[in-house]
Image 1 (tube, rainbow, N blue to C red):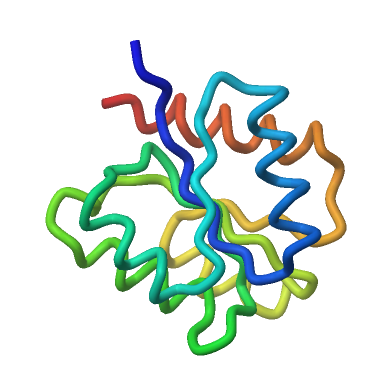
Image 2 (tube, helix red, strand yellow):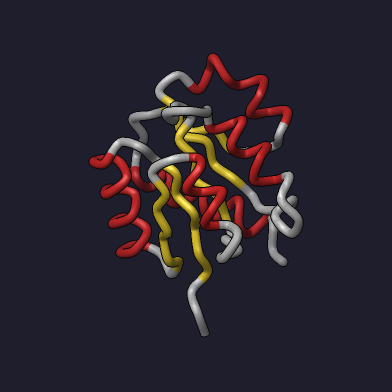
Length: 125
């Protein structure tokens, strides 16, 4: 059985490495990292992730805009997402409108891992 892929879009190399390591070691999912929104949009042409983990602040687009672009792709409309942001409260309306999970940085690892499990259990295929 192949592992479900979690697409992580994070432009900070340290945070990205931490997220990839944590998911690899603590969960039975395969993390796939994209450093930019554009790279994420290219990757989903070849891989259908089980979930998106999106940083809010990305270079050329924000995580909400990227989420909208990803969900506009055929077959990706129902994929759950987590938005990570240092100022999650500023974006809470956008996050709530899209019914995604917002997690404030810095976060506890257990909180993050539980959010992934919760989101995926709510969106079983």
